[in-house]
Length: 330
Picture 1 (cartoon, rainbow, N blue to C red):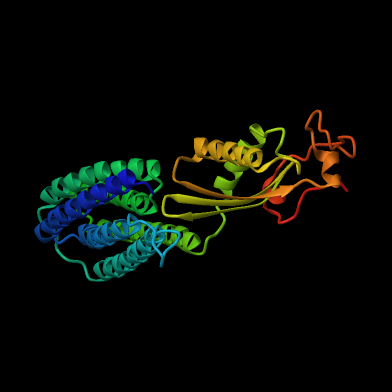
Picture 2 (cartoon, helix red, strand yellow):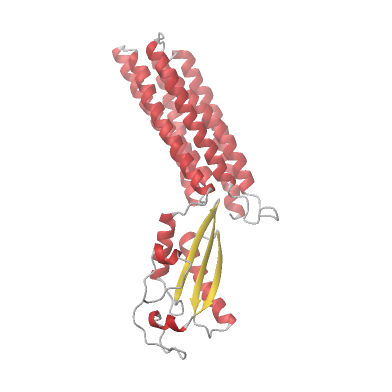
């Protein structure tokens, strides 16, 4: 990750951490004014917001460090760990919310000042939505999983708060106390699902699971801008460390190109990938010299060393471009 993006991510997460504390205070004020279990569920989730905000802040501080001897690929994976912790905390908060909601359903508590509670949680919902919007926008722009996780969490918190407000309105106008607990149960389940999704994505990053959507875009880009000297491309692998993409592949070129000519072909490939996926990219290309069987799938015109006539171009796909084997016609 370049320095400017890392600093921007860090500044945004600092604001998230600070504002999460303010919103937490507002929600607990609403709970103590009303004794509403649905508002308590919102306040409990805000505790997670605060904890996750500071964990995310630390992870972005770590991931912004330059690579060193101990971490040759940089510190970007700290973001995956941060998101994993955040997902776990969110799911745990959802479980606590379910427990509190069922308890309140079985043992109802007299509610007070519902109108005050509605105004306070509505204010917190608006603040969460705005913060989450900026987190998502900057996180996607800078390819920061920690910011994207924070943004989605804050926006899911906004949706759950809106649901709680609707429930409080129904309670206010009908006087049916059980509505409060039912709303809390519904949104407790939603929060658990949100936590699971964040946890699932972070574990995929930690385990270097292939990003099929990203690979698909890359294959499409390579096919669309395929150069005459690119006879074959295989053993393509992509690993993401924070915002940095590490791309490895084998590129088959005409065997008679000199080192400078082969290097120019690799530079063209690098510029093509960077144009689609940004400057935060490290490309490692192993160049192979073509063999006689490559002639049948090579479209290069006026090749001085051609042994066989061209028969058919092999279109690169997710399956064959990932294989650790040169393509050939059978």
